[in-house]
Length: 118
Image (cartoon, rainbow, N blue to C red; front, side):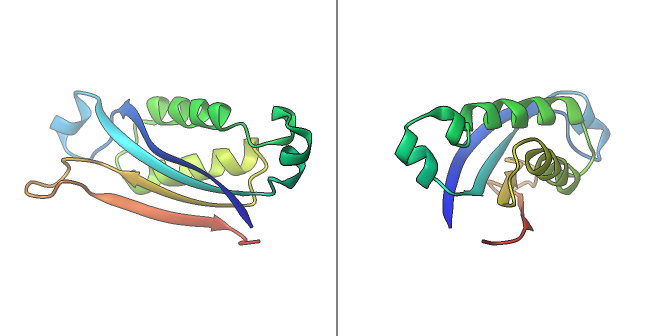
């Protein structure tokens, strides 16, 4: 299995259950691992044969910015659903970080894995 990784994708959004969290956008940070076979892209050296990580990042950013859910679990699932549907990803691992969500902790995150591991 080959993996394309995108780490530290920062997007501003509204996410949270508390009234104060729903007033001002704050950053969430996304780490992604997407299963793919890079052999064809490596042979052709053509973007059309690869996972376009710029397009993936743009799709994730748009999904996150427009979602505004209460839970980061919901947001993580929405991202996973969109990537699997729109990019033909058969397996992914996603970690969604919400820095500063808990006093005294530098970060809170949820990690999900979806699809079949090749």
